[in-house]
Image 1 (cartoon, rainbow, N blue to C red):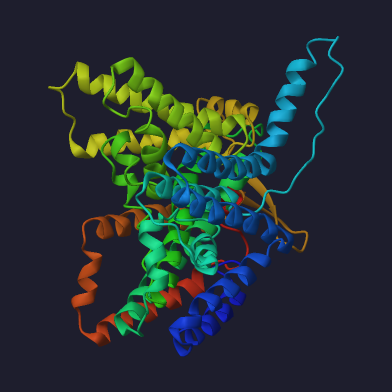
Image 2: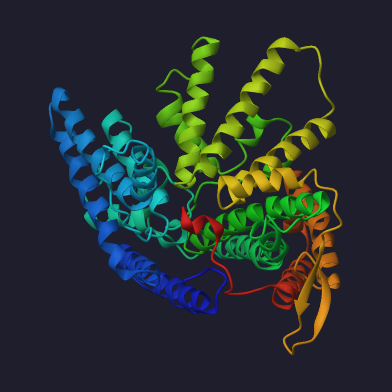
Length: 481
């Protein structure tokens, strides 16, 4: 069930009023049933996978609290083995098997080959696996008491606004909210609606519109596109993935807010970062802080020598790449960001007196991040190589032939009618300007305007979304992770 679909609109119109009509004592049950129904829209059988993870961690956490100090670790390891084992089987087994089979094929005396299972990945598995791991680790560290109510803990993992694409919540932020009675609050409703509208605008009006030229180039990398075409498609993808993922996060925040819950902020205008380190404090914050707290700092963090620091960064970014997908393109994407951030560390150390202007620093960071997105979007390393090579290809390939549906042929640009392509070009600076206003707090000034002005703006946004938006056509990009 997509946030940008009519079926979800009906779903939320039913769930929110019933939530407030029910006694607080039974609200957890409503939200858990609603979350199961929401998830079952995809592959119902995979609810068993979710509840397997939930059950393992629920009992492991209780045993960690009860066990003597020397036995706590075995329950932690049991939980980690269960979570990561399920994640490996569904997400990485085929990748591992295919690469191992390729290596062993070099040696003719090795006849054994691992089977290719072609398993369908449960939607959002990486998100709720990492959320479950954060819970069990926090309990082990003594930072979180184990949740004794099985249903409430299940809801922590399955809360439908952030179930399939995050943010990856910490138990300290969410568990107590399920125990606190929520009162109907008009400010929460208004705030939730604002976040939902902004997220829906990002997804339906911008991300799904830009997807067409992006797909045209990235799905056909060997078509001889001009360098300008590849650059434009890469720029469009940078905006597409941001609007798609941040749009989901804003909508998730808003939906939760309708019921009085507060999710963590997952994006803070990352494309206005002045360096790559700052970018990773603004992009997918719940994942970057997860790796910082559970991988980077345990490895030693910044409190180590330079070579060990670079090794720690390498581990974190390679794992981050693999978290996104079982493909060498994601490994390359992680390695690219690792090299970029190491280069930035070296630059700061060797040239501390040289400080670029904010505008130049932001432009350099944004350009480098865009180059990295080529690895992320390419289907495989061969396609990535073609796309990088295409940047320096000076052909005039940007015209594509379109069928108008009645067998009439007309010219288009990157798979779009000329007017639609120009509209996409117009969207990019407009969105970046709007994002700039949000980044500088100017958008919040709307809250101080008279009620009539505010509702005129909200209604105008709704009209724009319905007139220019594309609905129910594409899943959110991060659903597959």
